[in-house]
Image (cartoon, rainbow, N blue to C red; front, side, top):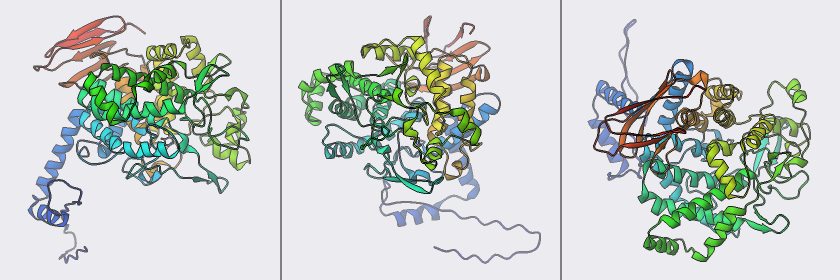
Length: 561
Ligand code: IFM
């Protein structure tokens, strides 16, 4: 509707126009019809000052549950990221059927699509707004049937979640994309990033560990976990040549490589990230089934039509999926070592930015598929999801020895061969390097902090903020720098030194406790548990374990780094 206002004006006299809008849709709950409700709300709304007060109070409530204190510029940027995360996802969206749009609600890039970026968002939300995490997992659960249909349509069992999706959860990844450098339209195979399923399973597990929400874990969470595990088990095939299982025809998080040079079909074999996370999903699914009460297990088997006879094969695959190695490092995928080395110096000298190396090479009539060059972390993503100890255990389960030296060499190897064409890249490398206690970590963390405020990708921020990278920086402080983990009904801490970010403080919602404070300053870590009727919290560090009761504050002196 158009409003025409006739306002008497006079020179030097300000005029204020107040317009109160109420928005309703037919999907809202507790309404009769949207128009009637909107008219009713708008006509009974309080005046502007009272509306402004309630708006401010609503933001204050959000800040109280989420705030993070870090001194200086880094702190200001982190709060700016937090503001954007909360604008997109907060208790105000928990009742809506919404996922995690990669670019927030701030721009039209990617047409609002949902990718795997929630992997960088939920771990943060779990410890502040668990109800929002649960809502986001419900969003995925509502689309589980669709993901099972997608798997069935390509002759697979279980759930094949889409790489890009929107309203109903169908695959919406574009089939062609434009290289603006060459003006050519090229086939897009990024839908082969089936690792998105493992991201959903990881989030289910992390959410349940952080909250103790066994009701979700034993129902919707279990259904998703089992169907994703089943997809991986079905995709894995035995390779007599290596005596191991292999997964073929996929694309890993590094989107540059989507086919072998000259191959007729797209996809790569034994992408390490895909295989290792698939093994992890199978382990967790089996673990969950063991923990379930027998009657619930039977019910689940019936509901997802799972035959107990499938499980020994799951176990076998979880132990025998292949991880390729070359030159003493983990290979990104089978045959990676056969690719050519890129002359990085020459490309850096010729171009102001080589972040989008794929576009540069294609415009020259070449293809990035032929080179040892990645857009973003792929193997190293494993060091983002799992602590060094967890990763070692996971590799041991798969029958490989991953010692610190192999991991260090692997980190160095891919760092030299990555162009950081995604904002997620600086973030992941920053955390992985911080965990490895490496001094270069800060420059990558800084890049992640500046991704949007400095528009480091040269123009992409105008099309929408990068929500994964923004939330990821909050998670980087919350879980990365503290080494915070939430398993076995305890809080695990293993603080890593990052001199430029050596002071921080935030509070968490953990299990029944609201506002558990964690503060690091002057080489000390302080854990404050507010008074309540809840049980004490067990806190486990590398060299000691303490129990902090409600109403107590525990101060730990950290070993000098
Ligand atoms: O999901 C990411 C992907 O990892 C890199 N390209 C952009 C996507 C959406 O943020």
